[in-house]
Length: 360
Image (cartoon, rainbow, N blue to C red; front, side):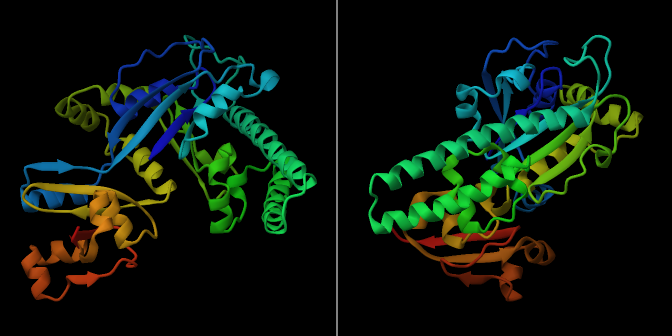
C-alpha cells in the first residue's frame, strides 16, 4: 500500500513525511519546482500484534506495512500551467493520497499566496486534480470515438459503448467540479477504471497541518465523500516527537498532557481509507500482521503470505483474535471449538489468525 503525500509548497508535506517515517529530510521554505519522489515504509501500529507477541514470545515480530511517498514538484503556478504529464505519470500509480493543507501561521515560512486560507488551498489543489482527470477522460472518449469510426466489430463496439457511457458520466461530474471518489460507482465500474490513473478517484486523507492550536476540520472540509477522511495535527510538534527516543518522547508527552501521537491515527486512517484489514500468522518463529483488502478470501490471504500457499491451498485453519486471547492459547481455543477449517472462498475478517494447509 502506497500513499502519496501531496500539498502546495510550504504546506508542510515534508514535515509530515518526516514525522510519519522518522526521517530527517530537509524542510525547505520554498519549492524548487523539481519533481522528486522519496519513499519510506512504516509499521501500522496494532496493539493486537503486541499482545500476540507477548503470548508467543516469537523470535521475530512483524507489523503490517504502509509506504508513504513525499511528492515534490507541485508548483505554486498550478493554476496557470496545470499538472505536467511527468508528474501525473508518477503519482497515478499511488493507492491513495494524504493531502497536507497548511493551517499554521509563520513569519519564517511565508505562504506562497501571502495568506493562510486552508479551504482555498484545498480547493485549489482539488481543482487541478479535477482538471487533470477531465483531460484524461476526454482523451479516452476521443480514442473510443476514433475506434468506433474505424469499424470496430460488434462485440468490441458493445464494450466501447459501455466504456463511453461510464466515461460520459465521469465527464459530467468533473465538469461540475466534483471529485470522482464522491460518485456512487459499482465495484465493477471501479475495477474497470483501475488502470486509468484518475487522481480524484483515489481515496484521500485531508490532513490539516496546524500550529499551536488544532483547528476543527469541519470548519474547512464540508463535503462528506465516502472515500475521504479528515484529520488535524501539529506537524512540527509531531516531527520533533518522532525524532526523540521512545523514553524521551514519553516524558515529553506526559509533561504536556499528550496521550497519543496524532501520527498513529494518521497511519490507521490511511490503512482504513484504502480498504485494508489485518490478519495474523502466529508461532514461535514469528508473529506477523499481513495486509488484505476488506472482503478478501482465504486463498488471497494465503497468496499474501506466499504464492505457493495459494497455489497449493487445501484448507485454512482460522480462529479470531478475540477467541484466541480469551482462551489464552491455541489449544484452549481448539478445545472450545473456536478453531474452524475454511475453504478458498472463506471471507477473511479483520483480526483472523490463519494457518494455511497446502500441498505443492
